Image (cartoon, rainbow, N blue to C red):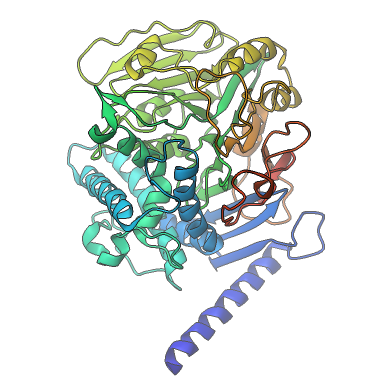
Length: 560
């Protein structure tokens, strides 16, 4: 017992010493104009460190790691992230489960507030099966070597996050790339899901990352479908657009999610591969709500296709892996399409808007469970190609109102007629199409981009920036749930070019900034969503404010 206490004291002393050293090195512990009162730093050594803070209700994290071995650098980056986010990841796990109940009017899964042990085990079975299939894909000799290496990087970052939360020190691992943390590496208790438990299992972390994919597998299961059509009211997220104006490109996005969302910003630099992005929750290896840009000049967003039908694969490469791969490692629009289309699991089917600021090329990738539709332009009309996964025909015809030479419109309804037909898509917030069509031609500055992505019609809360909790608004599919736009982001090509010019060294005194972000819900009748004043005032709040509100903030990067 005494030895264990001594070890804890040594670890605490080491953490304090390293944090103090980091602050001294970076000259930003106090006395600055930045909101540093809640800033926390953590450092393993001079080559792996990070910082986290909250500003205007936005959690903002930056992690930098470098090592001669990519996998070791990723693992150490993840370990720092786990130390910085810690309890917030456990909150994200429980908030995701509670949101799953709250935003489904039919309360399909889980059937009550908080999942039962049987529901946790059902979900755990899917997650374990998918993880095993992913490991098998990495080990397969038919998998492209470069793709496998990049996915291994993401895997070791995930393992690092888990160890950062669950261990005091990094583990001594084999980073050769031959060894992988398959199911035999973990104890049985680490491959079980928990809810409202004080500790995090590896499977909990996998669930936080794979939540959207897993819920789509459940929603489209034979037990919950009639004649192939899901009976579950599936989440429909996000409004977004890409706009060309002269030589500039503007990209925006807002996330329609349950109001328990912990939407945040995170910036990762591992061995020179840098990405700044909006993360749906703490604990992620990627964005999951998909907005941001990397230092190779690629900016991205997505909107989820509203669907009634899909054919899902538990053993596929789920989209959370493919999107993280594409968003963080692509150097071109073609790269993005290549990485996002290495598989199609029929889960979390999205439309991705992409821009390469090096040559002002823009693209759109849409998908059903059987077709990828790829649009590309250098400023004129889009050329469109299709990739079929079942050998059948995939039409390249598309809605000319959603895809124009000047802008791309994201309203959760596919531009591709083929994708819309495959998914039996419907438009449950039709006002957004009309609003975007009217407003997008006038977007010629970042301020106008911010204004459009936060537009709310006072008479119709189901607008570009809107809410479902009020019980009214223009929709053929009414519902009353604590859900809506919880954030908004905006970026420009010039911001991406500035990001490309950074060295990537952590510096708390640096004046560099990323994209604009707002955490908060739309004001309707003068007020945002407030949990304690809502029909769901009984809901437990974990690392989310009672009042879902905030202002646009130019997010600091803490990189030079």
